[in-house]
Length: 446
Image (tube, rainbow, N blue to C red; front, side, top):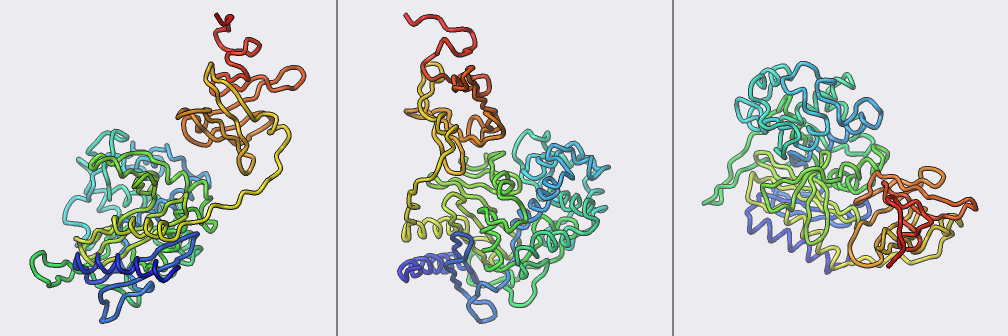
């Protein structure tokens, strides 16, 4: 990156570390799947932290667990609409679905009963589920967003039962190992930061404990480095390395529920936190454990992301810092548009392009890259979607209003396309063409 960009990014994290009194902080920017800048401030063992210094990830752990669950779905071993009872029988909250557990809409209690789980050694699954015998469900499943650490303890057990091994072994073998994330571990190994609370009225530190959370560990146990988290940021942006199909990660990034405790800027997909900022959409997650804060966010459209790790219980604005690093990078070093080059088009597709009408409203049908079709109003906002071929003259909607809906091309005896049937709506070459099968019939214009 340009020296001026690197200085601006370093100054931003330096200001955050100093102003928010973080014992140490490390950050990185990811572009096109690679770390293009990193920086550290403060001290770990008397030295500036590096991209190989471990910090606790906290709830970013959940994104890894969710990825392993989605692998089960893609293998046909479960359906997201399956009730938990089908896979982990005998719990008092078995009516909640896998999708609801992933998206924090299961209604399960936020924390495990008993002592504060993040600061005390955790028990095993039997003890956890036993503690949830009464009052575990706080809301009707599917009724609302309610963040649940317990839900991810449950998903860890689901993974263990399907794979016949602990959730950590599943992650090591199926996610961390294939992605080369060798410095992501359940406990610190090698160079690592100690977790601290910073006194609110004095510049003194209190060491925080970091016990094993037992059955609650899938909610936030893991430690990692900026180097490994940079690889994970790239994964969330679509550089999946074969661990999941890019389409599955895109599905995980799709908004399912909104966190209405703020001003509608944050939501959740399948295991991923979604953030809207300055007209852009970011996917990733934050993490918080006693003594540590973490965040990773990526804009999949721009393929720019960032991450921040700090060893402070609170006080560091990691999410805004992460967003600022992304915004500054894209503003100071904007991408050049890809060169336009002509590309061949299927003659049958080319014949479908041009002007169509939904009733009296004009639409354009265009060919996009990879043989996709875009149907959009000629003017103003409206129902616009992309479509992919699924067979002869049939297409499926990929996004927006018509996502998942079928578009069929109607032809006359000569094979000429006369109309488009899209989820019962008929599009014609001229407004309400009487020769097309418009539902309700067409009278003369008056």
